[in-house]
Image (cartoon, rainbow, N blue to C red; front, side):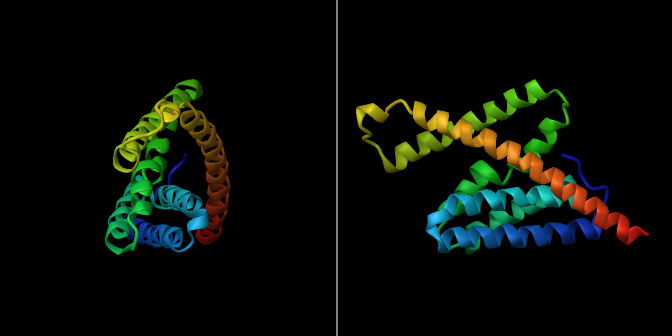
Length: 178
C-alpha cells in the first residue's frame, strides 16, 4: 500500500472525514443486523483511504478516533469490539507488512495475524457466551478454515480496492496541482 506524501492540517482533515465515514458504517451495523459484519468490514477499509490520502499518521488517527467514538457513541458495543479486534487496525498493519516486498513472507505474517486474532475471538466468545459447548465444537477447525478463506478473499479484494483508490486519488491530485 502506498501512502500520501501530505500531512499536517490536510492529514487531520482527511483523517476526520474517514473517521466520520467509518463511524457511519459502524452505526449502520447496529441499525441493520443482517449485514452487520459487512458494515464493520467496510468501516475497517476506510483507514486505508486515510493512509493513502494523508499518510500513516492519518490512518492511525482514523483507526483510533473511530474506535474511541464507536465505544462512546454506538448503542451496541459489539460492532466496536469487532472493529478494534479484526478490521480497524488492519490497514496500518497491512501497510507495514507489504513494505517488506516479499510476497510469501507477507502472506505468512498476514495469516499468522489472522489466526491469532481468530484465536482471541474464539476464546473470548466461547468463554463469555458459550461456556459449555457441545463436544463436536470444542475444536473450531471449521471456524478457522472458513475464517482463513474469508480473510484471503478480503485481503485480495482490499488490495485491489487500494489500487483503484490510489489511481483515482493520484489522478485527482494531479488535476488539482496543474
